[in-house]
Length: 453
Image: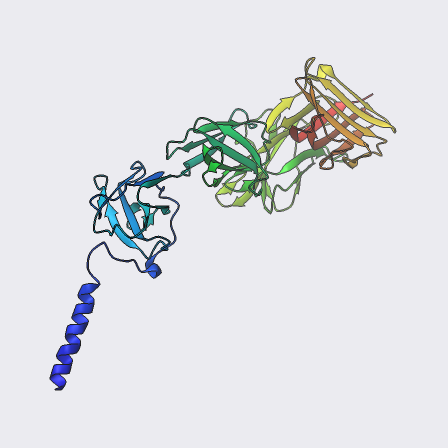
């Protein structure tokens, strides 16, 4: 009797095992489904014909995104993952064994590998179709090496769409709050960027007036001076000691959280790499043993044994006891601008410090401090215009302070006033807005060493 019971149990187990291995057209266990990777692009179109001979339908779809697909179907309203799945190739088209009196839903997804599937597209009922707005892929964004205010964004189209939108803003911005540009080609040039700002970029497809794909991104455009996350310092200055001509103090501002820097110096005009290098773990370094001649200084951040920022500089220190080697220079959105000193006038007294310099009729620079009190830091005040800096480009003024511009940032630092030689030295940074508050220019590494009246 026990032997018969064992045989009966064995037969039941065998039948259960065989019934679970009946090929592809079987329900899928939802627990086996894994999150859909984003690397596999979904088909952009799915169509299911009406019933053929009462039990068959023809399935057509966009076959450009992959080489294999899964079609899943079941009674109307079924949840994907609980239906019957059929593996499809580019030559597949028919599903048979259906019941004409049943209302079915059909879904399709691309299969890029055994572990890589696109999102499901559907549901589609027999005799209908669906057009899907497919995400773009392969988004890249590269800042121009000759004009840091520009960047080129490119992407791949994965459907029949011929219209896209690019959205961008400072890194970390919330989608919906960025600047949006339209494009009829899979590339777009962004303009008016700030060199020292990093940006996030997203792209989406436009398939109809109210039909868009998801935003794809972000792709990051690094700020100028950032190498693999190592940010360049700012505000570099170099001052010769007033008591010891052979000693100078070099100072700067950390670009980020780095705690180590390299300083390189040499005769005016030396090439970086050929100078003398020293290191520092603070944002100031006293250098001794100098000659009385003029020097250039550079600094860069050291973030690890193999990771450094770009070099910042040069900042020039004039020869001891001389009034030569004057300069007025800055970086505008990352591009160096040197002003012609023959077209520069400087005034300094107890009521006003003023630098005015012209490049030509359309481009000039003006720096002004009202009621200066000597050396020190003068922050841009708003709305009281105690400090003002104006950079004019092609007749458009970019000004540091406006009564309605509440985001004024930056400062002027007067580091040295020599009343004997009547020279003044310092640095400055600021973000200037145009009159309409629609454009900005970022001025960094501004520095001056000039005679004054």
